[in-house]
Image (cartoon, rainbow, N blue to C red; front, side, top):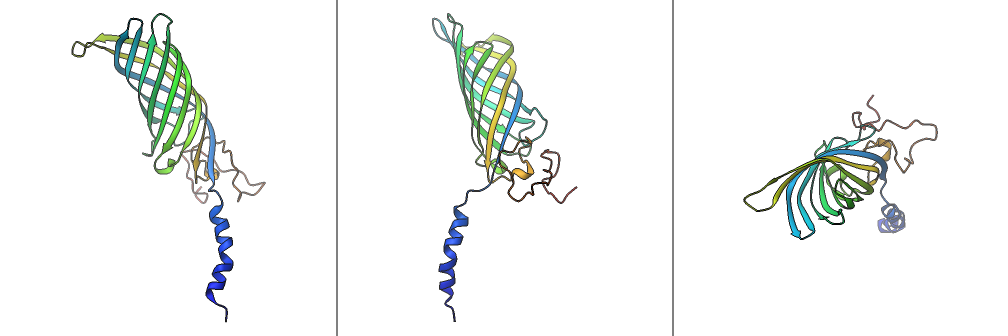
Length: 217
């Protein structure tokens, strides 16, 4: 009669090898456009320096029109330093992005440029729900179309309102544990093939509006 512990010992290396394998991840690339509005206060903090403190709010649109981040709402508390004499600026902020499914993604950005145009880097730092563990990065271009100011008598600062467009030309992102076969992010450009998919088997659609259940028409 075989001892039950002997079978467990023999099976242990196999079990450990399975646990050691990394989880499948969904990797994708998408171009994202986002009209935004900003509100905050503009202070003169030096003879030739202004500081803007406020929030940018808007809606993200993935260029191909699908995915969990398509039509996502974002709010970005941020600060900008504007150098009057050199006409240069630096911006830094954080963003909370809410997908239509109620999941959240968090990000941080830095940019440099001139008033009306700022270029930099946008980094995804994590998420919740279906987007837990999401990371990614893209170059970022922020353009300001219109702006206006009015004096805030209470604080002595200036209330500033502006509108513009943010562009992420190539957002590369990854969600640990995601199944790229289902295109959860909707980019249609998964970076890791599904090992269970046959060579001649067509890839299922990655559209957000379609079910991730392969058995459902």
